[in-house]
Length: 163
Image (tube, rainbow, N blue to C red; front, side, top):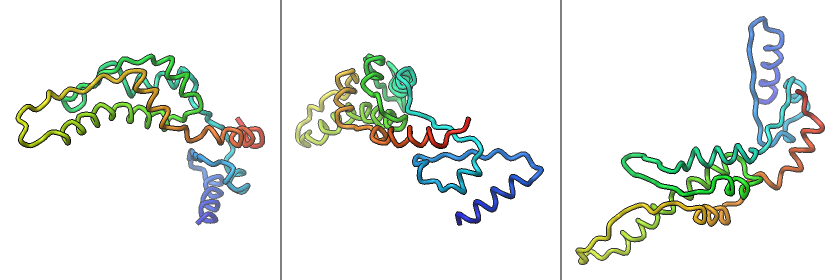
């Protein structure tokens, strides 16, 4: 299968058609040299910067989010959270945001599960506001997936990057 891919890429190079090939790898050091030769431009896309992390957190956890008739409110120090998430990938940040948003929902499920059938007084259901402290607690339990690989990414970039 790999050989067929390499043959097809060689065919693209000889073709008069304008074809743009974009390849991505989370483990670029696993690519063999034959593939690297065929990829003319090799660029390492690093982990998100602090402003990018801040933008991601504010995008996925805005101050007020209404989805399906459910309101989720947040009171977050986006700048402080972005600093705390140094070394997190974009998918790590999204996962942490989803987890922070789910915590108030889980509290409601816990209240519903502990409610006795014979008890007629059902507590009012309202999602709690997600705070910076809540998010920091999520970060403690959601470790970054790429931080330990940064040295390998940097070494690969030094050896193979061509811009």
